[in-house]
Structures are given as C-alpha cells and as structure tokens.
Image 1 (cartoon, rainbow, N blue to C red):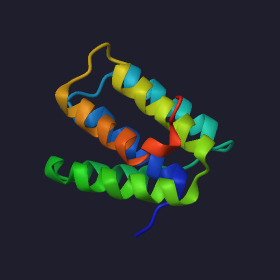
Image 2: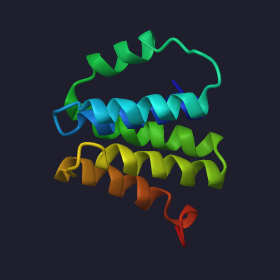
Image 3: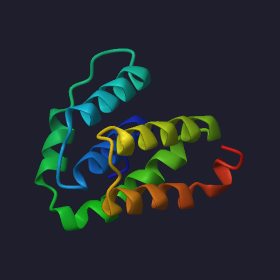
Image 4: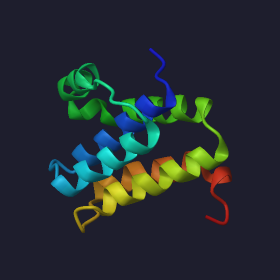
Length: 119
C-alpha cells in the first residue's frame, strides 16, 4: 500500500530511531518536530505505530526502501533536501551514529544523490 510523503517520512524516521535497538527521547523530539512541520493539524498515528511495532527488525530495510520510494514520488526536490536534514538530525540526536543507522542513512543519500548535490 502506497503511503503519502508525510507518512512515508514518519515511517523512515521511526525506523531510523529503532534500527540501533534503542529509542532515545531526543530522537522522539526530532520526530515530533517533523510531524509539526509536515502536519499543521493533529494526526492520529495509532495505525502507523501498530504497523511499525509489529514489524520484525529484519523487514526494516525493505520497508525503509518502500517508504523512501513513496516519499520520492510525492515530493519536490526541496522537500527531499528538507527530509534529509531531518534524517541526519534523527541519526545524530542521541550523539552516536551506529553502523546500522549509517547503513540506512547512506541508502537514503545514495537513492536521492542527484537531489542533494551541493547539499
């Protein structure tokens, strides 16, 4: 099922926050900031949380890629640059970048490479 860009972004950030096996409250703040910037109104994320919390960690990479593609299809180049900034903030929020986080972040930058030249 295709997601809109905001939900796809939310899924990517949530996966980035979970891929190292720890969820830090500083990562939660980045997600809240993203949602406030993307949604000017309150949105119910219960369904999204159910999907993500039921997902086995071995499925994260495939779901991340699907979310990345959904976001790409519905976004402008500037929206992708802005999202990449959120993704970098997410990974750096807990003051350490794990190999797992780096793998997902690299995937995002590699996939959108032509979009962030001169970034």
